[in-house]
Length: 478
Image 1 (spheres, rainbow, N blue to C red):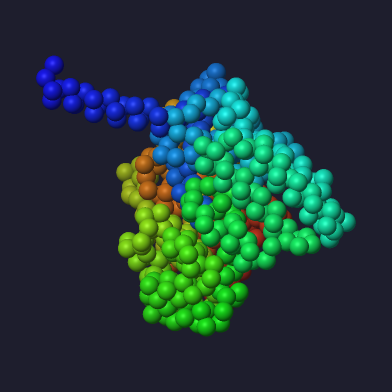
Image 2: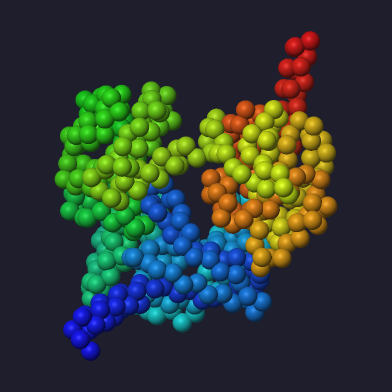
């Protein structure tokens, strides 16, 4: 073997080793979801909580599934099946065996998805899930036992808290290699300092102790939750001069002016990466305040998404832009291209009348129940509302489009999984309803369905109000 061939072999081996270390696998059992898809999402950032799908698989007839994907670092993941979802922490290169249960029968149905608790098989004590579950149980027991109405205003709780902190430190003294878990412990305990009790630290003391010298950890949930809470409603709390300079920076659409103004605030002086991140969070928080021009804020966010100092913050800026403009009431509805037989359908195809667009999983019994409840509503309002049902065409589900068209009186369309309509309309759970006005602007997303919400309202009431308004308008014209 010549030296060049040897070099290529060594390089290939090195990259193979790296891939093996980052390839993560989840196998499991989901008897309640046979034939359905199970998906894995990673959280892009913990300010917007925007999710990115990284893997999917069909649950086999024997209820098993297998998911394999690459992870670049320890992350909190969301697993989804049917209309339910559960959380798991995953290390790069790790293997997990889980049980995905159906929702608790006593939990009310949630159109956006019910959370279920995943169960682990053969979980190693050194795994991040085991350690977090163990620590959280210890932390919850401490709060339940000692943070009572009588203890909170006494030195007794302070003494117990100091004892707890010392016990945690000693117990995990040897666990120094796991950065994710170290942050989780530190900022879970930091939350305890946010409880109201005698002698707790003030805001600046908390900053100096917990934040000032701690590097930003974008993918650590406990850290980000603490940071989000610490800098919540920042503008009303900072010095009026700094607040005014930030406002002027927004009027000028100048990220650098806002960034420099925020540098005058003590808790944002020392960590440039944190300052830029909090600038983005603050812009997001004031977007809907009437004194702040929304167009300027979007211009600033767009600029940071392209030219921000730190790549992680560029992603956050991009995600915030997406969140602030995605399907908000009054925003222009995203266009689409759907096929109904040989006919092309776009948003323009449904102009002149209100447009009720709903995404459905035909294999779901719950979805079928809702569609049956929607039928009498359709009959009442079909003259003033376009009804269109869309579902993902997946060969493994073996859905008969012709049968669905016969079963339902409205337009039924099968869309390929790659069709951008599912992404642009942020379809994650089923059924998912969107109401669009005759001019192509969002009325509600998600909109109500035929099943009552928490205040016993359904889409029937909204349609009735539209019908009433249209009749009154026609009467006025005469």
